[in-house]
Length: 541
Image: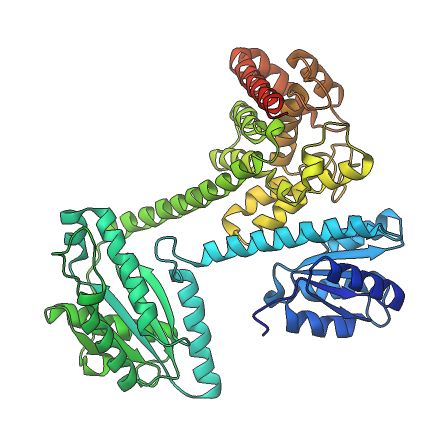
């Protein structure tokens, strides 16, 4: 696999168009590969891993649409941004392209500058996805692989040894008396110790070894093509050097030690990845039993370490704890993405309150509708996240002081789909992504991306569409004044059965009357923010 992906792969059978686009992209400092048909294009894509692929729809051999499908079916190419260009202007072709896996499409003859702008948007989204994917696979404190990615990498290495032969070893390392460190010196010092240990492990191992934070104060090292003897020697070097290398500058008296268990895939007791981890764990806990600060080989542990007897009440308590931790993980991830949303708002100060206001109105509507609590949470999250796709919209559109052209409006209409593309790697937001994906459907079936109608549109999408439209109508923009709240309510009701679900336009009117003071407060607060923005702009000029 090429670990340095190129920016763009062009798949175009017309040599003149291909050459023109190739030269233009090189002049704009992109790295580019090119192909004249889908078969050779797929070879380039699988080898170079381009961030963006731009393909003609009609190609010799297999079509550009089939190319999209094959890319989408290849897990190794997940995150590749696909743009299809076609001369076919009918609606069915558009639906085929988007349903076939393309992220964007452009009609021929296209403006090369517009295509370049769309390519830049695709690169921006791809790089953001890489950042989110990396964040999802690594431990936030130490920067090492997290537990989930450790298991995937260990599964892969174990499968390699079973398929092709050879061995691999696993080190399980646990800091001794780490709770005492936290209780005595505080969690900040404890974090410094964990970060220091992570750096030390990376310095001690080979480039081919894999270091992960297994959980808490426990770390793991996967050593490919390494037998038990060599892995034990590595573990001993790590153990001996920890007290000198892992220090807390503010607590020079603190001495850090660790216990390490070592297991190997050629152990006859190891028939699965689970067995390998268990053997390393048994050795580690035997080291704890022997007094800590030792290395123990799995083949020196004669009897399995006795498993604790867990009562049913304890099992139920642990189950509830795991559920709570999953909810915390989702909340932490949401907070990280909301930070990105706030950073995005600095590009578009006129709509800085839009995501927050939409979430506010949608939360009130979902409560009044009596929706289940998990769905209310998903709708609120979707309200905060739905504009994340604006990261793929050029500044000249976001900050335009003039009414948008049809072409500019078409770019903005892609924002929900771009948001879904960004959220795809994060499965904890599957419900939110579904709500955002269908945010621009219309109740009469004339919306996009799939032309769903009526109750076929997800209920969260129908509710959020009304809340978002209310805020958009009552908020001022550089090119128009905001509408009076009562007039906005009437306009939404007039669009019932066409653009909006009548159930939720009626509900919005009722909630607005019941909570008028709260809602007007949000509107006035956003207007005050706009006054501040205009004052700053006047001062800057």
